[in-house]
Amino acid sequence: MNSPEFIYLASQSPRRSQLLEQLGVRHELLLPDASEDTEALEAVLPNEAPKTYVQRVTALKLTAALARLQQRACPQAPVLCADTTVALGRTIFGKPENPEDARRMLHTLSNHEHRVITAVALGYQGHQWSACSVSRVRFSTMDDAAINAYVSSGEPMGKAGAYAVQGRAAAYIAHISGSYSGIMGLPLFETAQLLRVLGFCVKRAASACGTSGVSYLIRSIS
Image (cartoon, rainbow, N blue to C red; front, side, top):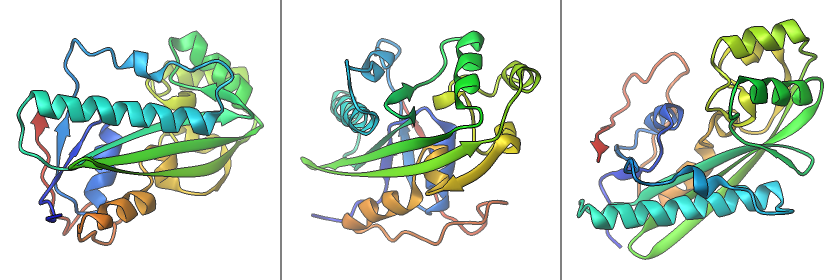
């Protein structure tokens, strides 16, 4: 198997693209067509365990992305997918449907420790590889005023569990155990391990202040 020169990132998340940049891996965005029902892939099955759920959804995303690549007759390259979910016990917290749903999630997570599970899958030339990161996050108490102010900022929307660890919610996160990048949406250690299987030379991650010295390419494929 020849070492590829770049990968496709099949994700609409700017956070995942930014994290991948830190590994110095050239990547192009392989975004879904407007006709694709991406939300249907994220439906939770009855009695499904959180880790099983996120691994299944990531596998479905990879299958859809590989088919998309084939249909568009793009140059062949590895395809990377990821999915993140927040879980309190066996309860799965996806992206909030509306501000009220976001408030409900934050009320539930307040003063509790929960898990953030991110699965990563890589597909290339008929082969697939996967990994999973499980981290724990403990929120301090968020009163109604704090929750309402945070929801009003708009930041919870589009985020699993209705919060962004790297955003304003950090003021209420008392403790983190595990992968910070995994909580953000792409665990860099696990991702680097998968990419090394294909011969990528993964560089030392850049500092949080920037990506100086990192070589990468981002281009949207649509």
